[in-house]
Length: 509
Image (cartoon, rainbow, N blue to C red; front, side):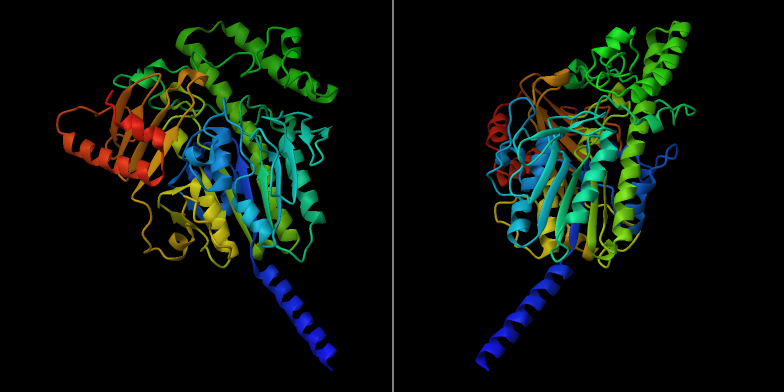
């Protein structure tokens, strides 16, 4: 009799545990690379269509004030994983950092609590993933055509096809083979839309009939902004005709490019057919000066947005998979980029700056039963907050050393008060001659401190100067707000234990 009772108790506990596991939400986080919010129709771009990303926004929430702590690829991913600023997780820049995988992450906490966890696609953290039940990653930046993938046994496999499609295939394969009695958290890391903006063959030319308007500050002279004046990331001077825009002078030159020489004969034939015709037309025009710069801008936009088309289509595939397998209602889906990107604003491409286009990132989220469809959130949220938010949703205790804050309370209660200000710190002092910088953004103002390459302050009134063209630092009448912002900045530096920024604050430029 006792044995039967114990068997009954054990059976009940097993059933209860399984039921609890199935009630806990699944999580899919889709992380793209360098995808600008300006390049998404849900964010107001009427010249393009991004139905996959838009669907998440329409069925959940669009975040209009989502930001990053450090606008550069590897460090952003480290922040997402750990919920800590770069100074605390150790991965400060792409030039000298390697991710210490032994430290805690939201993935490790989920795995310990019974989740199946996976990262598939672009990883870009220099060391192997730790704490996942499965991973399959691109080495380094990875390549768009016929990419190599590193397996958990350290072997490397080349998979034919286009990277964005392959990454989605691998993600679905993993979902097909998972243990359906357990909740899962899957991170899908896309290479798109990283430089060199090489579209899938099916998408080449899809935006060739659109002439994209130049941003109002495309010919920015950087007056009053010392750091901006010395950068090297302009479409006019920095963007390379061959490497970036595929305008190669010969087959031999194209064959030296690692993105192109790995193409299959059919892929190469389509590539040559499309780009050689454009090159011939360019040569016939004999462009120079601003006319050539504006031609480069149009090519950049067309290639970038065509590359984004495959990204969006495969996000749509992820959503379709969830529908097909009756997973939609119990799965959180979050899409974000690792940072923002310049679409010609200030005459630039790339990221790095605390200016809005690179500091701000697109983010949309679907959480059936919790998020009201069509929600537009205008609270300050950061990639730092992703880790604690996912743990909060999963019912897992948030580690005390995570510096981010769950934004679920903001979504559940519109009266909940969020951040009043955000702290940013970019460390790299090499690529594109962008000066290291840190600063604070409030609802109205932004204060930036540059150091090393350029030693200077910048102050912007975002209500009056949304494009951040006029540096007000040191101007008469702004003494009080400058002092207040410096005080707030110092408080954030102390809160996030950024000792380097604290030392720099002691010395005026």
